[in-house]
Amino acid sequence: MRGGALKHRDFVFLLSGRFLTSLAAQMMTVAVGWQVYAVTRDPLDLGLIGLSQFLPFVLLILPAGYAADHLDRRRIVTACYLIQALSAAALLMLTLSGMQSIRLVFAVMVLLGIARAFSMPTGQALLPNVVPPADFNQAIALSSSTMHIAMVLGPVLGGVLFLGGAQIVYGAAGVLLVMSAAMSLGIRGGGRSKVEREPVNLHALLSGLRFVRSKPVVLGAISLDLFAVLFGGATALLPAFASDILHVGPVGLGMLRTAPGVGASLCALVIAYVPINRHVGRWMFGSVAMFGVATIVFGASTVFLLSLGALVVLGAADMISVYIRHLLVQLETPDAIRGRVSAVSAVFIGASNELGEFESGVTAAWWGVVRAVVIGGMASVVVAGVWMKLFPVLARMQTFPQPVERTETA
Image (cartoon, rainbow, N blue to C red; front, side, top):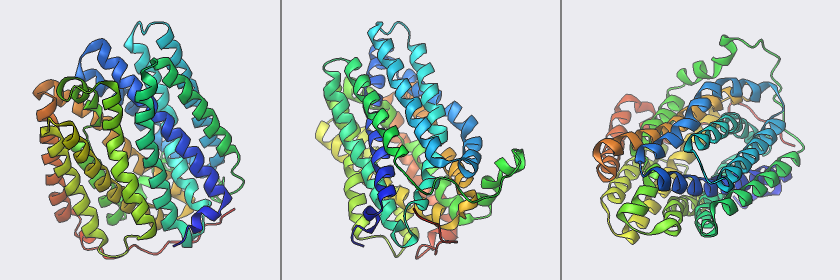
């Protein structure tokens, strides 16, 4: 594999737009988390940031998957990027007005959740349409690597810019999101699935869920990610760790948010050129168990460098799980329902991230931030063991399946 995916113009445009969007999102996450915690000093409010994004996300994700299968995927992605740019502008205005109420921040998070509900399944469904099957594995790895590079740069950039004020962070993020929209408009082909028009009813909306239930390998992979990250996710509590435990300030918070991206991006770059082709099941479950162990180490650490190292390992382990899950979902799914199946996958991902942030905030309010993270990491290890028993076909999987059909490229 020698960079074949990068030879395709539409893939480069799609990748560039997603990179800039992820960069902007990470910058805004640092600023929002620090601002809210500085105002309330309540870890539960950090969890509510995630919940306010998750609720509209989960309500709209199935209709979003239907839209991805019946409308122009390029236009949907462009609209989502512009909505996120408006959200950045709203946060900028709230900051300039003195951040009178964090309730308005949660309202903006709802708007971001709506945009993510449509952009996630649409972007995932669009990716196989802009590269040929021979380059798809590498495209997945390069896409994941690029997103995690944004996770490396975004928090650091957000933390540094925050020294000049949150308004600078939101202004810069808004510019990047407008650029992302321009990139998505540059995609020429692969925008619309060839599926025949279906009536908008419950049967059509739930077709992706029925497909996932019929595929134990796909169901096992995405549900494993759901529960492992749901219990083991610690990112929502990073502002509390940076402020009260590690005492490193907003720049240190940016570095903590960067660390998982460092591990993930390095791992993804390796996978792009030395792909996982054997013992797929072992890699999947081993990576989830390592994710849990790294979470435990981070939660128990009071040394900044050790905490950074644990988060790097955590990110690398998560990257392996993400790579395998994404490939299984895309390779097993026909293009006609890829948007709806991607929507189901996005529900699981969204639940593990945003709902996981809420869970982290609640448990931290009950037990304290350290105990909440350590117990969550232990739960992730237990989940890996339980899922090996529940989905033995996934645990024994040796190689990836062949694509169910060829997808056209621009």
